[in-house]
Length: 187
Image (cartoon, rainbow, N blue to C red; front, side, top):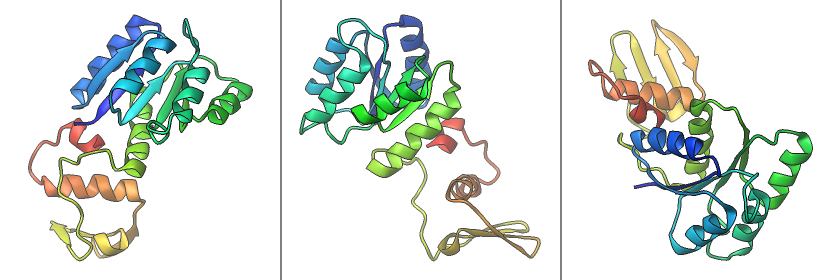
């Protein structure tokens, strides 16, 4: 199970993110201020921290710096999710140790894509689908998928796919004739 810590002083944002992330199959803890966030991060292993900047007791920039200064937490991915959207704020966030920076208001799908990119780097995401075998070829009708080259053949035409396009198509082809839940596709 992937564990995520959501830190925000707005209870509505915490509730919204908790609901969406839990529906995606993640385990979610929350904190409403920087001090509590730091205590939670030090007491439990998290695969990702979603961190607001403007909070009471300790702002997100400081929480991020302290997490990065802790040897046991230094590799935990951090996404700053904040209303502070100036270039100076973003620079400050990345200099504090954030792995990504998303400005409010935001789309949940964009947050998921950014989280997935971080999970790919850390290996934290447990896939619901089987891993791709390089020599495996999937076929469905006029479509053939070539994992070794990240290509598809459609009606005899060779199409180069991005890694994300390939993964989505691979997932769908593993479930031909079935409805594929959004959570499976996003994972």
